[in-house]
Structures are given as structure tokens and as C-alpha cells.
Image (cartoon, rainbow over all chains, first blue to last red; front, side):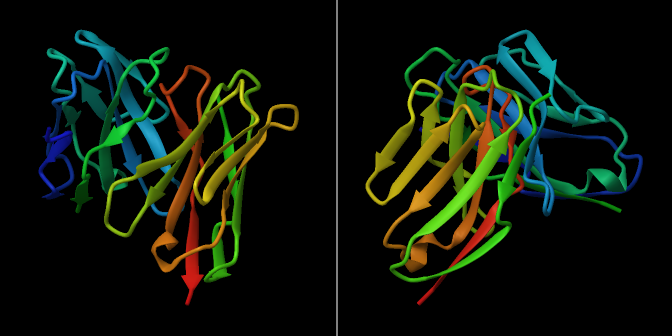
Length: 115
Length: 112
């Protein structure tokens, strides 16, 4: 199992550009989520999904879109990049609540810089 | 929504001594409390978690305690080793492992 994979690992964007961060998991997890990590602020939830076709907003959703067309993939789209979106982005997946194994497995992260 | 506060932000401990990190949460409906360890440049990894129907859980040198009345939970690391140096995050959720709210992290340094 590759677990949770993310691409790219690093990305530099200019203000106003758009891009998609890719996330995939091969553990057949129903739950997937995106976080951003900024110094001194921990991880903050952007969007999450409890299954294919179902997505919802987290704590900091503005400026980001997601879709979940398959169980495996959960891409994060930046519509018009802003310097405030400079951050490290982590994708995570897990079984749904109510199942014995609660662990959220994180991907390796994408370091995004917006200039 | 849920708010999780974590203290201290930095902690230095002599090798072999114990380390304690504390978190408080605001939503009394929270029922799941995981702790993650993140080494420099790496992804967060779960080290221990506890659910609201349990007061304490232990895994070798690591333990977590939960006080639902006071709405706080703590991570205890005994017999610390250099490889324990990392940033530790607590988190809480009202819906199992979904929609985790994280604390701001504690940078733990083990002094040889």
C-alpha cells in the first residue's frame, strides 16, 4: 500500500494563478480531508468528504474548492491564488467514525508559495 | 465551533525525565482526542488517542488522561529519549475522527 500520496511536493505560484493539489489513497477509506499548516497555528481543516460525491466545508474553506468523484481521489483547487495561501497543505484519510480504527493517515504534504 | 488550546508552546526536558503537554477544549460534546507527533519536515503521525468513555490510556512510555468535567486532556511521556524531540499536536472532535480541531502544537526538545 502506498497509503496517502500527494502531488506536487513543492509549488510556486504567482498571485491570481489557479492550480490543483492532488491527493490519493489506496486504503479504501471513506473519509478524506485537507488541512493547511501555518507556523504557530497548528493544522486547520479546509474541506472534508465522507464519501464519493459528498463534500463539506471545514474551518477555513474560502478560496478553495474540492470534489470527490471517486473513493480514492480528493483534489484541492485554488481558484485564484493569494499570498495568504502560502502554506503547507496536508491531505488525510481514515475510516468513518464508528469503526474501530479511527486513525487519520496523513500524506507527505505540499509546500505552496504564492508570490 | 470547537476551540482547542495547547500549552506549553515549547518544552525542554532532560533525557530520562518526563514531559507533560496539556490541552483544553471548549465543546462538551467532543468525544475523540488524538495526539499527533510531527518531526521536522515530515507528516503528522498518530501516537495515541482516547475516546470520551475512557479516562486514561497508556501505550508503553506514552499515556493520555482525559478530564471531561474540566474539559482538558494531557499527554504524558516518561523516560524521554532524544527521538522524542518533535512537535506534538493535540486535537478534538465531536464526531469521532471527523472534523478534527487541532491545538497550536508544542515543540518538545530532549536535552541529552
